[in-house]
Image 1 (cartoon, rainbow, N blue to C red):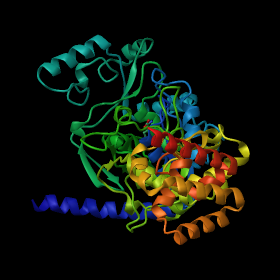
Image 2: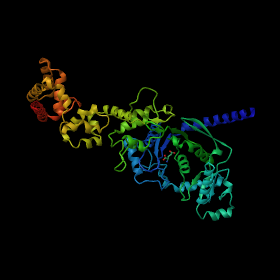
Image 3: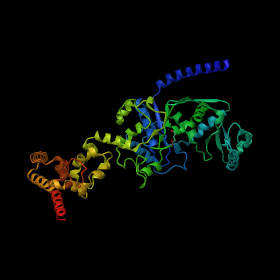
Length: 524
Ligand code: GLU
């Protein structure tokens, strides 16, 4: 027992020493992080959140943000995804410092263009005896898999059974050379009975027994590397100092650590981000959740069918701000941040361990907060806003935004908020019944008269209000009649502003129309 503790002590001492050396080296190294998506379709907001945390981490440390496209699985690659990823990052203002679009000294940045690099590096592991060729036919492995399933186990190709299979550990050199002429894969040789120690910046130290791991395939039979191998080789060659990615990759970390160790490479730091959970219930937020409850889970639209946050009327600043809060907080009350503010405020300490629940209402609230910080001109510069305003005369666009700005959560609320510009809603008859015995017609006639005489809206407002006071007409009746005439219902923007945007002519027409309607009701 004593000896056991003594060993731990020695080990800890060495670790401490290594940590100090590492710290010294790290201090001298420039921070480099990467976002490494696979181009398998539109980027989920979880992926965009990973990109954001990488970006913020880099900016905070005056480092470099790399985009690397992990497209080694050609079967899963979907055309258009890479452009989509690039566009989504640009929309959010997170332009990669290095990547397939703008290059960099560590390229190429698409894994499919790095085949030679992997082919060279796998030879290093073969030579070191840390990886080996395996020639087993798929049928044989499937049989083994079925056998294991029957026993309620998961089949693993590893230290416990690798010598029963056809691989370069069991064949002679000559047989191996012969077998290499046909299909083969290359596997990592995971030694048994050891402990892999990995450290995650959020979760601390994780210890994993190698006996629980299998001999993962590093190179596939098509000559392409697997995710594990390409990922580690590239993170090393691209001098990534901290790997920031989703929690779903945490189980891969021991394998990655073993690959680093096999090469004799220093590992970068790791940070695994909490999952983005469904609004209610268990599990990760999925596209199905969004479809069911009417919100997008992608930043931009994908094809014609799948909307994105941008097309739903979110600002990039709203999207970025909300995503930052999904798993991070500064530890103060503040929730509304610009990207620039986030770049300063972001810290690893604020990243939470537990999953972050997605809340569309909160996302809209954040977007609304961002909208209110913008000037009318800034809002008008957003292309979505121009689209939304296209049915209206261009010279009215700015005043229309001014009119409804305060009422907007997302940009697309503009559509609903401005419906009355074309024509009034059907009159709210309940309101008419309520005010009918208070002589709304007289009020409307007075509004009409004042409006005809007065061109200045502010003066018109003043005059009509002082008239109502003098004649003891309640403000309620005045406003309700006026609003009913111009809008048709009681909700909407400031009614004097509505009047000004509609213009004198249209406003007078609408007032007359309501008077006629009231007359008609009286006859009935
Ligand atoms: N290509 C992986 C993905 O699609 C990246 C995982 C990582 O960042 O290591 O998410």
